[in-house]
Image (cartoon, rainbow, N blue to C red; front, side, top):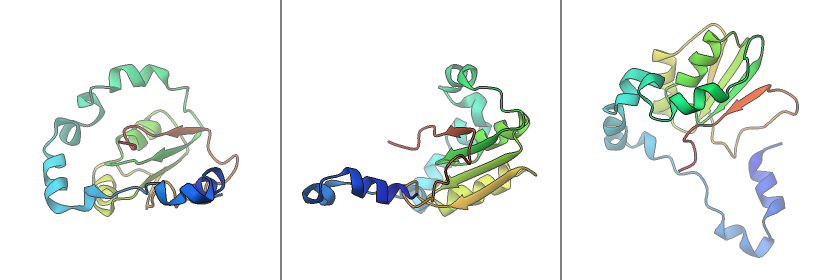
Amino acid sequence: MKLGSRLEAAVPKDKIGDVKVMNNEYDNEKFFEEYAKMSRSKEGLKAAGEWHQLKPLFPSLEGKSVLDLGCGYGWHCKFAEEQGATKILGIDLSKKMIEEAQKRNSGNQIEYRISGLEEYDYPENEWDCVISNLALH
C-alpha cells in the first residue's frame, strides 16, 4: 500500500490541503554542490555525527532484507551489505542522490530506485529492517 493513500485515509477530508508533500531540494544544483562538500558526503558514516549512537541500535542484518528510506548516497545500504544483508533497497526522491549512491555504494545485494517515501508501494512482510536516517527534515 502506498503511503500517500494511507495519509489520505488518516487525514480528514477538510485538512488534506494542509498535508505537505516531500520537497526535492537535493536535485537543485547549488544545494547539491554544497551538500557534496559536507564531511558526511565525502567520508560516509564515520563522518556522520549521529552514527556512533545509531550503529549499536541495529539488529543483526545477516541474511536479512533491508529497506533504506531516503537513502541519499547509500551509506546505510552499503553498511547493510557489509553486515550480511541479502536484499537491500535504497529509495530516494532525488535523482542526483541515487546517481551518487550507485557510484559510491553499489553492491551485489543493493538496488537503488528514485521514489518519494509517499510514492513507494510498501509490500507487507517484505522487509526485516527499515532504515530512515535524516529523511524527514
